[in-house]
Image (tube, rainbow, N blue to C red; front, side, top):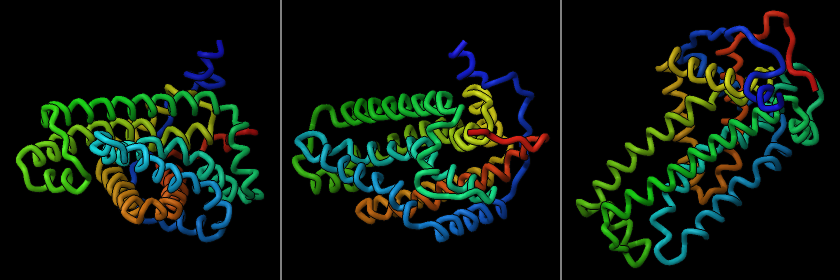
Length: 272
């Protein structure tokens, strides 16, 4: 019964309606996310401090011999887990939207949500996609380079941009990575905010998220591009920029969700 509740929610739910949105809604979501961030920057940074820390740890873990070719897959794959890690940010925006008190304790209190088992379930699914991407990237690299390993970061980067092997790795690797990113984006962009908002279960949340993406292909593609560019800027800024980019994107994701999924017809929301 517990497993059924995780998948199906507290009670059988009707098909969740999806709104069609436009490019203007993406801009409005970003503006609302920026408003949330500027209103409460102190504990937002606290919540997201582990992002640059984890990023630096990834660089350290790939600094050993024969490990650095995995740095790019780790960095790009790290973005797959962002929607799960941003649950606390969604809670901040949710509470502020409803005029409730907001503090870092309230944000961390999201773990008391009745939907948390379902949220964790979707998070585990994202982790599985992340691990599958790393294995795929490693196999792709080994196949193209046939066991040859550049001696340094500089040699590897030079080889990537100047050799046919490097061009092939870039082309095929990014195409494969795009597939993994599309899958992860489709199942997570709406599912986590929805589960925080309503206890509908993991299955309904994932289904709704996929429907939201395919119902709004252009604005959701634009949103994915905004996320990718924001994370790229954060990584380029020695990962420290992620402490600013992640909270902005997290808050904006909540507001994008609010524009895609109408409020419960009965006005009921998630109860803590």
